[in-house]
Length: 286
Ligand SMILES: O=P(O)(O)OC(CO)CO
Ligand SMILES: [Mg+2]
Ligand SMILES: [Mg+2]
Image (spheres, rainbow, N blue to C red):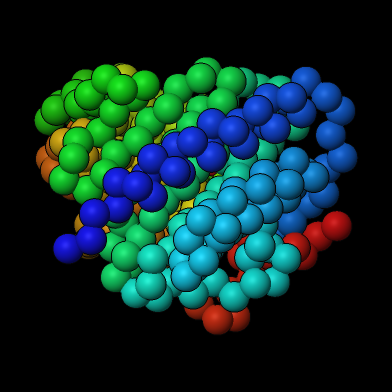
């Protein structure tokens, strides 16, 4: 079996370099364009960082393939094959980036035979580097990470996002899911504005669970393996096996907590990332 450590180390080094671009633009005025909805934003820095990452990786690994948020938004086909593939979100938390709310991350996952081999989430402003390689444990700035192990939903801090979908069905489902969780009760519900960093909170034990319907593979693939390698559970919101293309995810400190959240929340219709006519995330509103 291939050992992808060289790729992981290269990914970490280019994520750190690219974060300099994010940080130098962070305090500046940004030109903002809309994508799939008025809450789905893109800036020149998102596009620039994705180009920097892809060209550096392509230079070093010319045979590898890519799924990049902004390349897909520009019309590139989203297709996961068995080839080594880098799944890139150049800025996870673009709304935060635009507003200078200090949680923005570069998220890089790597798959082979369609299985996630490693994940890197670099929370740029916090200078926190989360990473994990399959079978090798999860780390934050070099220190091992462990989930809380919490089994009791009524003692959980649960992280989620409101998301970019603002149609009536998505909004009412999203808000009623939060109400149902609060009534269980849980200790609290939180949202940092970046799915990648949200999920990494579960890996640190600072939160006990994360769930969302409507995120894309580039938002969640890297942090999914980080949560799993920290001892957590990642599954679909319907309780089935995690599928990064399904746009539904629960990441939790234990199977008990994940199952309880799956029982409580409802999903709204959301086309799969790898569906041919799914234009979710593609430039539609400008
Ligand atoms: O900022 P991005 O990459 O659009 O991602 C959002 C999801 O919509 C936050 O995770
Ligand atoms: Mg994102
Ligand atoms: Mg992004």
